Length: 204
Ligand SMILES: Nc1nc2c(ncn2[C@@H]2O[C@H](COP(=O)(O)OP(=O)(O)OP(=O)(O)O)[C@@H](O)[C@H]2O)c(=O)[nH]1
Ligand SMILES: [Mg+2]
Image (tube, rainbow, N blue to C red; front, side):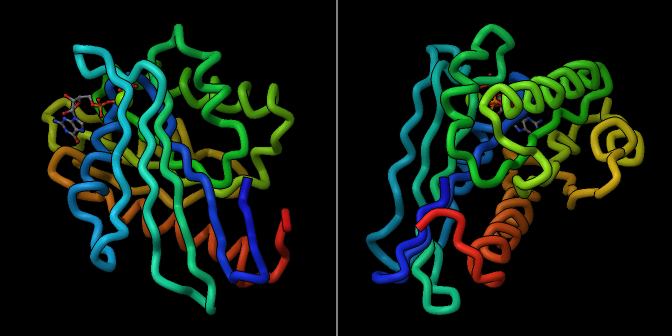
């Protein structure tokens, strides 16, 4: 849940990377952590709770501080959920208080059913948490574009971005850091627009 402190002019928002198992969510956070440019000293620590085989067991967490915008110091808390189907309770926990979502889909053709299932699971979990999807800024990241067996972007748009209001989408190769910051910058802009530009703080 966004925290806006008018007195100290601070905004804190929570962004969750969601998507099917092995899609590249943790890789996004690792790349952001490795390449984020911050004022010396305020680079957050990446906290990962992974199994020995590198699958996310609980979540990853990375706090980053953005520059001041409109006089507000902005802090982003980036989280990933575990994509494996069995960890749904954990996904619900991580989603609590979410402000923005980066949905990381796996572009490989054979992963399309998992992408669609994960997106439906996201909608279900938001409903369970009584959160209104229509009010939560989100974007789509079509990851693993470097692989040979990827589905065309148009097809992925048809599967995942086929609603009344289309959201921004990006192709990416997260392990090479391609498309990672494009996606993060976009969700950041959308959140700043929602919470600062419009001047309608949701939670004081
Ligand atoms: N070829 C390729 N491999 C990638 C890309 N992004 C991530 N990977 C690899 O895919 C595997 C899974 O990536 P993770 O970031 O752990 O996936 P995840 O979505 O966090 O998976 P869970 O934690 O199980 O939900 C790792 O071996 C990554 O190095 C990409 O763009 N291209
Ligand atoms: Mg992970």
